[in-house]
Length: 201
Image (cartoon, rainbow, N blue to C red; front, side, top):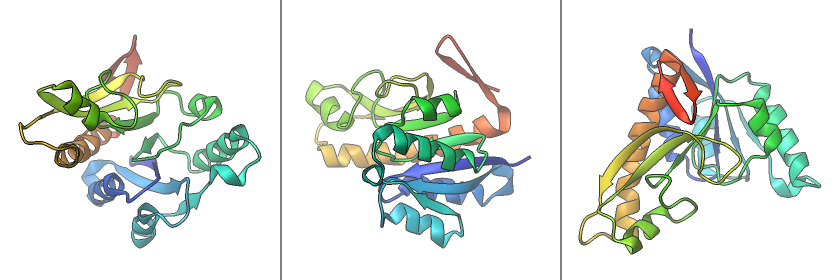
């Protein structure tokens, strides 16, 4: 059986494109039922439309409160009946209603080896700290900022001449591969969370 994904984006959608390409192979085990964004005119939405995938946009500023936005986003995503919701560069924190609707089924990818360097500037903080290994983390979202149970991690060596830009780009490449591989394993083999440990299969 093919699992349904809903993918949320805020920008160019390079992670989304990697998932679109993977889902083209029936053996991958998933299809993208819809792609959503929090802003108009993103290249991520264009990628989805080009691939014939339904799209939706819910902007926070179009709702009277953040909770009303969260309620609308939750209802929209739920209408597609996804087995897994994937944040692929979605730059909004979803609220308690959303998290309750998709417990253990909303994953996000971050450009550091969590719990080190959460937040918006993982590669820059890694360079400033002088670490020798940076990387990417796929995790199940909870109510914190980059604090959920970890699904997968991959390490990216920090080179002596790295800048924030060069390190970020190498992390992105590893991040995309990890996202595709891990989402595929989750939908094909199943997963469960026990005491913050995510077990696949």
